[in-house]
Image (tube, rainbow, N blue to C red; front, side):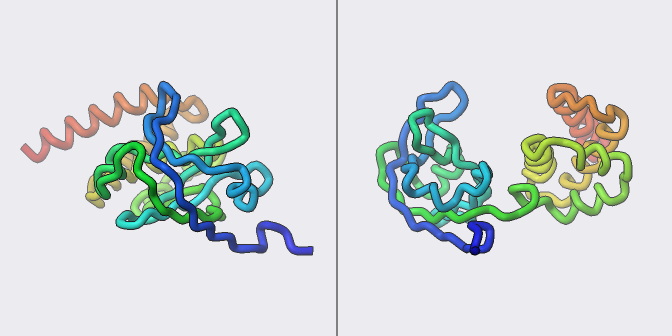
Length: 185
């Protein structure tokens, strides 16, 4: 018997960029439950979304609370291709079969491999926390800054073990950034 994990699904869809009724998100693309059925495997709603004019990105299908789903599109992605609310867009989605639901940069992976205790702590985190840390460490263009963030993150994980506090981590990163700017000045 073939399971959904053995099949490759690539759905080509049309939908309208819509205002999401949320205090957290603003813009999204609705997906009907009929379309998403083929993509959800065992509750995993991670997908790869491709929009014309943008690189593919890792996303998740979020429930609208009424049986359907939506994908969030942040403001910078919308601006890059000139999307406005109410505009119909074509896009493709497929299952994200990656281990973490997003790609970890080579810089972050290499630094993580040099910090055994940080790797142990990281491996014990929930998938969502792992994705948050990867995004946080890798969401810059400069390889130098990626390495600096990865080192700071690993040092933080080793010092704080299983007590991950994103607010404290953010404050420590701001201080590391300040010191890096001073050393260049």
